[in-house]
Length: 544
Image (cartoon, rainbow, N blue to C red):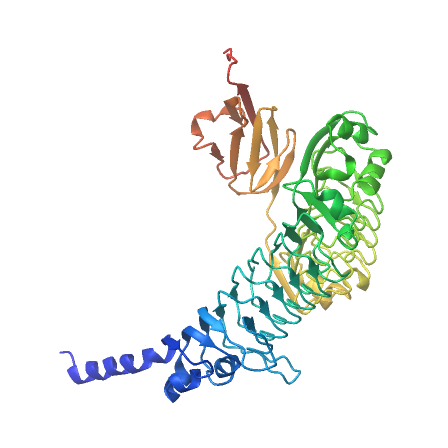
């Protein structure tokens, strides 16, 4: 039989416990600025989490929200007007230190998560939100023209913000240390960026709508930002503007080229024949043979190159210093690659990911030094030589997977600058002891074993009438990809305009009828395989 007294006691506990984590909403109409504190009860000052204000506010009201409302998380000021009642600030501005202490320590209101700013403000003053470490979202009004020095300094959880078109200046350190900002899009009216404005942000690219380059300081954008997307027709102005010209400039969506170099040494002439200027190439896919003349073109005459696919290029070696200081965001290495030269990718700060081919045996001295955005690397089993400082100062690496069961003999400076206490090292089964007792490899605090499955090669063949994509990678005709045993792959097959899919063959079997919305899904791959795709012109007649 149910104990009713016990059940009633449990229900009472639920009723009184739930409000502890509940949201407390409050909307207040303020007719006299500076009176917010008197319009809230002592209990409301302690417990309100979501506050909407309507009417007139001044600095005293900001002080109330900052100092007297410890639970306040979400604020809506869109329907308020900021009134000036002192000589310290003007009307229609967010006052300095509005949600931050003014004792020089930049301690912000850590409970604040989101805020909608008043619809008529024109400026956010010095250190208004400094140190608001829980702040994730700010809604700016269309009237905003200035964001002051240190305005959002240290807001480490602030994500991508939308700047209004009227914004003309962003001050020194305004978004310093906002490490959760992964995208920066600047408005067309912007005319000035201060020192270290976005230093410490995680974005690798910046999009700007202004056709005239704003005044910029050397540290306005973090060193991670390697590419700037500018309006069509504005590229030359940015390439000649001070500090902007240190970045890769991409006009509009950028210029893409896909070339098959039949004769080594003809890359420059092939690009010219395609009607593209060398310094305007942003995305490049190369097949065929390359020599030192082609390498010189890539290294010295293509400053705005941000992506290059060499997977189908016939190359055994990446020459010394070929891509040093390049603004690369992506590289697909040749599938036949055996060695990577000294300093080949040194200071490529935009590179996040590397896929080494299974044929690779040697990585040169300082080959990837200062590639600070690299996060994970996989070392194939055939790699036997990793030269000094190969990954020096790759401070973003958090995981290394080494497929070699025998630890390579390397110098300690290969991993200099990597936090080996927090970087995970994954090695083949039954080899962890060998790694942990190694003088260099043993400095990794976390070593884990993983079964290394067999890998197979899948070759893709297609004609020019469409594209084949696997795992967001566009595959070239003749390209070989490595596939772990047992993996299932999905290929998206898309004909170009004027073409249709004629036939799809997988391992000598016609699988055209198995396509669903252009997608072909394999069974578990347990052997090497070939995928052949025939695209046919719409007016062509296929002969059987």
